[in-house]
Image (tube, rainbow, N blue to C red; front, side, top):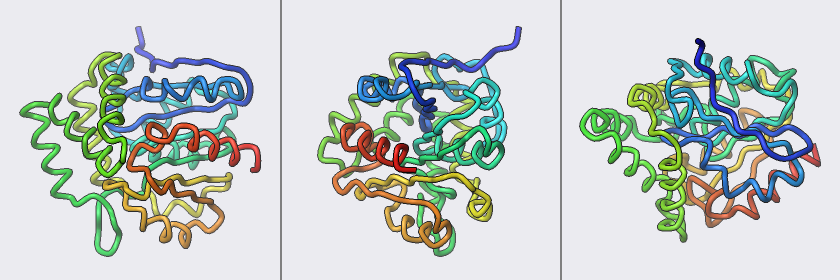
Length: 256
């Protein structure tokens, strides 16, 4: 029997696909559902190796995107957070007729710093990969703390992230290792000019993983895209500022 990705669908209206980040699962969006389901048919997915999709595997961003496209709506807005932003962007490049609008949250076409490109220092990602072999649960918790760092509501943000992770099966260690490898190596910058659909980029000004300064660089790389910065948010603005986040999302979807 072929193992399928786990999808959770709620609400009515325009189809909206939400893709979580590294170490997480689809439950991370749970608190947004009451704000979204009156307006959209929301599809939450557990990426390969995560949550209820623990037994599914994928080694590349392309494989992840194709797996999602197999069971996703024929036409939808795709929103990806962090690593999920890479997956959503890849899907938009592979199947523009299926991804009619793209939203990336605290994401980057290249997460690792390289030359003048700002991002996560490669040694930080190397440290996480090394720590995975020793204690992967502690490694995920450290990553959660890093995601919330700088947010005025950091303690509460971390608590919500932990609750989401613990509410579903733990991620497969191999999926975590693959995810860190993708964060270290994937670079979609040269392909971004091929995006034809409306694209909204959302950032947290206090984000320590995706420096807000890359927003201006992407303005130049992809001038047809739009961006918004949440002044008091870190890496998870949808958790620290859910109402503002949904307002920005709805405004973009309805305007574009």
